[in-house]
Amino acid sequence: MDRELHGRLDELQRHPYPHYERARRADGLTYVAELDAWLVARDADVREVLRRPEDFSSGNALIPDVLPPPAALAVLGGGFGGRPVVVTADGALHQQLRAPIVRGLSPARVAAALPYAAERAAALVDAFVKDGHVELMSAYAGKLPGEVIGRIVGLDPADVPAVVHGGRRAEELLFRPLEEDEQVAAAEDVVAMQHILDRYARERHAEPREDLCTELVTSVVGEGEGEGELTLEHRHELVAHLQNLLIAGHLTTTALIGTTVLHLLRHPGQWELLCAEPGRIPAAVEEAARYDGALQGFRRITTGPVTLSGTELPAGATLFVAFGAANRDSARHPRPDEFDITRPPGRHLAFGLGVHSCPGSQLAREQLRLTLEELTRRLPGLRLADDRPVTMRPTMIHRSPQALNLTW
Ligand code: HEM
Image (cartoon, rainbow, N blue to C red; front, side, top):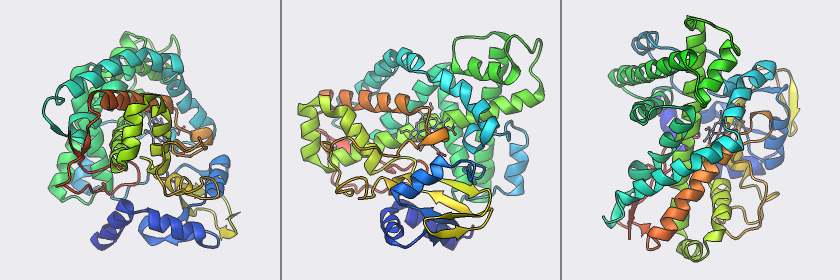
């Protein structure tokens, strides 16, 4: 993608809502050059696509905006991965890849991780509560989800920072226009993360434990099978799986913590209401996820000729399925552009729908709940620092404030 187009894409990503509105009002689907895709923006159309995975394949869901140059690809060649992952798989392979993740994120497993999550949330707040100001993304939102998913996967806390960093660098490498030396440096960080994940895969193969990493190893190698070392193919598969799961698990949650706090503080009356009536926290989380979700949309590709919303599409057409646009559709959500934590619950699409719907949604919601409980209880005087305007990061997959400076 050239720099001029990338500049326009950044602008769209920072301010997608006017584009969504135009697309919702238009007849049929709207082709958006910046996204290189047909924008699916109405709630009913998004639901239709998500309910017909055989016609709308996820094969292109993670297509990068930037193709790394040969020097970065050479670095990546020294790593692991490059195998099918759950988000981009269809049909039977998708079910096979998804099953161990669903088991590893079962309500019981999530519940078992909550005391640790609560302890970490409190400790992160302890570190800045006396300062009178904080940049929440780096001091809190960028930390808690990595620690929590790290715990569930079975990582040693000492390895979490490098794994989180590697995930962020993978996103930068594939979605940001970096200079070539930066692309090579990002690829090196990604490969360093992959080597850590490979070590875990081999260790859990040798000595299984009660964690999600073991769940994945067992699903790939087979129960009670695979005496001896993991094959190289299995190692590639497992690292791809783990990397995908970890990135899906922490970057999204980091982002939603940031946007949730941002919108609550932009509406001080609602923040005060929440502090006075913390029983409203779960509803506030749902409203933040609806109003400005972290994962704005993913792509799909048509498997054959199909008509959607009156637009005829050939086989191989790319769609951008915008959960974030559907969530502002007045046909489903009255007064959709108003942030209102008191609205009656409506079925939003912030965590997707159907076969690919988010298996980590409960874990994400619990972390949002813990965060708001902690902040409303300990820092009810929280407000946005008025000297620093908030800008959003240019991304459709981890929408969040670039930085969130708060005072109290
Ligand atoms: C606020 C946080 C989160 C948001 C907004 C979010 C959103 C989503 C959405 C919309 C999808 C559907 C994608 C599609 O239809 O193509 C999805 C899938 C997925 N999410 Fe989440 N997610 C979040 C947190 C998590 C967490 C905490 C985990 C894991 C611990 C996770 C793991 C996954 C995985 C593995 C998939 C792919 C499922 C499949 O393809 O079958 N997510 N997520």
